[in-house]
Image (cartoon, rainbow, N blue to C red; front, top):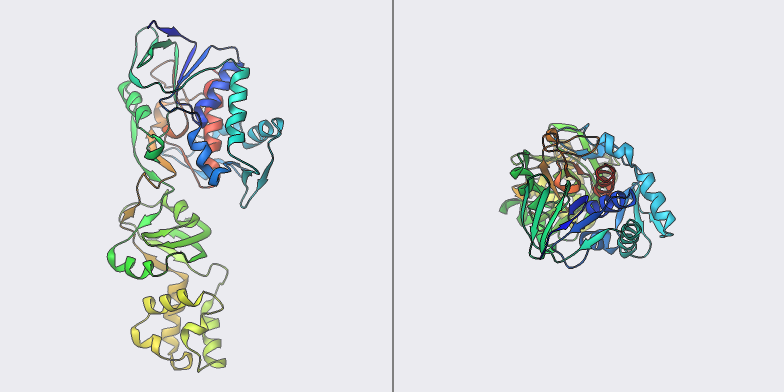
Length: 400
């Protein structure tokens, strides 16, 4: 097998890799994309319940987590959510806004993959699937050895993503190759992931599995970063959009602070009113306008001594009611960990942005080497922000 030469070699046929390929190909570059998977865009296809939350109307730098929060600004400005939406519209893909600026395909995520492949075809991109990469090195050009032979190019783009969803074939290839060229790595960890709890907390949470409610959540002591979204009790702990969002910021050992009544500024007034107007009603019934009965019962049992749950509302002291109200507005709980990469939607950390140009995503000390997408230490919020980073970073690297 002889070597195959290109202008640009891209490792990874996911969102970022395909975006980079179509951009470079349409600029007249000879592009080869290598991927070990048997099909392109596999993560795109499963996203958003198969409808792909492909971007967010509200995309802005503050929606991203990175050791340098300013790093993503240039790429997002060079190729914005509106630019990607224009591409989607050009391909006549029907889409809709769900909530909070999240855009989904009306029909299928396959429409997005088909669009990207059509754009790659327009740029004469050479897509090589089922290629196992065994070695990456550089002499005068980058050389990538695979089980199908050697590929060479003056430009190499690392776009193989992170460690999340290993059943989809996720690997740390980009991190390993980047490290072999001297780039630093910010320690990876699971992001946008459900959180787990100790046996004592889990005991009462399990009984509530399937119950969901809107909350406001932050890491205790860091109220400036908070999310108002749904929380879901599961048999393994807590999940739902609120938990996934805060997991990007939570550190082991930290407690979370959860407002279970984000739409109510002063619940003590409601409890005191119930005490006065319905003194014979149970405390659980008094919470009935705020929570489902099963959740109300569990919260009373969790936040108050057993005897309090046996008394009617009129028999409760004002102090007890105030304690309950305060707990509902500022429930503090300490996770023990997360459900790990198997349940994580993204990988936090990755190639240190200090070693990359924010304008091009090229390695500062290794000319011709680019790192894009999830492999970089830039992680978006839930809601289409990570796809937008893939499109933006792929576009800027593909333009060089």
